[in-house]
Length: 153
Image 1 (cartoon, rainbow, N blue to C red):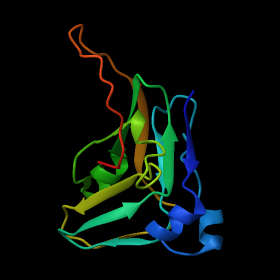
Image 2: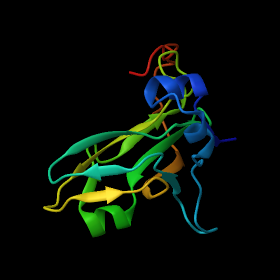
Image 3: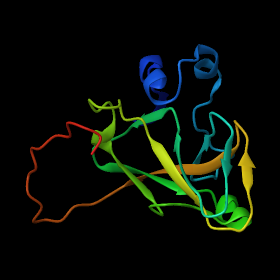
């Protein structure tokens, strides 16, 4: 089982702003067709990226999924190809134990950098990144780890 959820309104107020109408209006990630691997994340608010600028963007989203799964956050092909905008960390790796962690409920952020010479403004509702769920494997010699995540780190 896996799915996306909005962060609580209380967390939204901490991370974004105290605006119930904005909270109620933003969308959960969706796929655009039955053959699409990625779930498009929608901007909550307008974002302007100047040349060379790095901007941290809240998604308002958390996700749950199996213990042997991971969620990759990747810039949509069109975002990188058309605008030369990339994720600062190239690929976001969101582990299953990030969900509902004690420091931020598992709220996912993306940090984008404008590598072009142009200023780009993206509007609320635009799609810039996508999330892809994947199973992963571990080694035979992997230790039985008992440690649990206690923060967003």
